[in-house]
Image 1 (cartoon, one colour):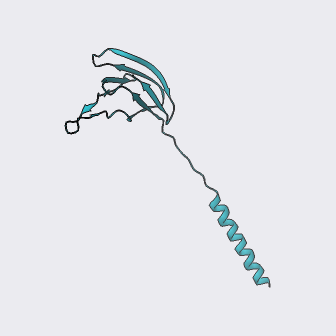
Image 2: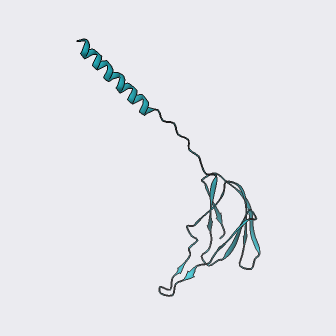
Length: 117
């Protein structure tokens, strides 16, 4: 009888330690400090974008495909990565005239839409 009681007690204690040990989990998640810019524009417009006086890229107008005759704008759903925080965005038209200067706050992992229509 004493032998059965000791086996049950041992099984209960081992089970308890296993459940307690598996239930405790510590994690450390680091969030990247980046945000995203998305530009909404007319497919027939071309712009030059300058972010924080440092990063420059172009938003091209749509490209007409010879085989289908349709126009394809590759900037419709494109996201541009930038640092989180305050960002200054300057937009120039095809004649290099400044048409928009905007300071935006972008939170970590957030997307800010810039309307150019």
